[in-house]
Image 1 (cartoon, helix red, strand yellow):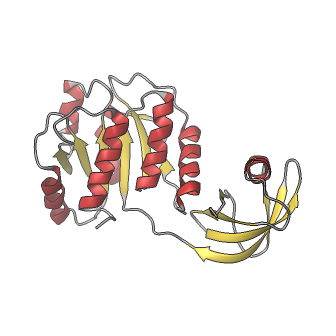
Image 2: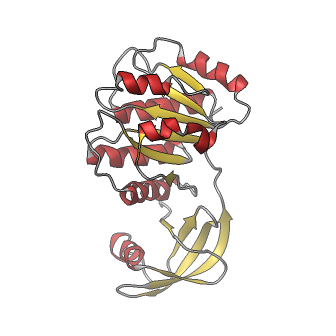
Amino acid sequence: MKIIRVYINKKIANGFIELDQSQTHYVKNVMRLNIGDNFNIFNENDGEWIVELLELNKKISKVKTLKEIGFKDKPSDIWILFAPVKKLRVDFIAQKITELGARVIWPVITERTQYKSIKESKILSNAIEAAEQCGLTFIPKVNKIENLEYILDNWDHFDSERTLIFCDEKCVNNPKKQLESIKKINKSNKWAILIGPEGGFSDKEREKINSIKNLSIISLGPRILRSDTAIVSSLSLFHSTIGDWV
């Protein structure tokens, strides 16, 4: 039987915890749990716990903690910077970034970004849903959407030791060998992957990207990939080469 897991955005400790209206709706109407049933709750600060459903009302329910399970490992220290695309594809991107493993999800506005009305709260809700379904206890931080030019101009301020991996469709190198080579010189083991918009980066943006001190440029193969595919491919490549799959 599949374990039911619910993310709780409050302190979890031995004792009693109230679930809010949306969580109550989920356990009552979606999962159809009854008084006395057990399920799991979790968050990134307190880990995962087995709880028993004690009260079940229309808007609020109450659980009792039974056993602390603990934490799942955090993913490698990798940020994902991407230019938002259509709404449903942004939802998919948030879920896949969480499943594959990243510390930060950061939507950026480029000169060719078409979809700019993005809600960080929606990205976060999709990340939480993915964590609930995939047995994770870590939720990526979702940064406020920001202009790429501003981020690049202030890269040293955000993290001067972090290596920016630029997935360039014009690059023809062997990405695994490139990642392995920069792993040897990146002592901080902190990374960020930059994925461009549909239509690619402008010449001005490329010039700014190439001015970053800690920069590595990699290829994602001989075919042009859509943004969501490129994110999945780049994260899979990163983890299987120098991330937490090795």
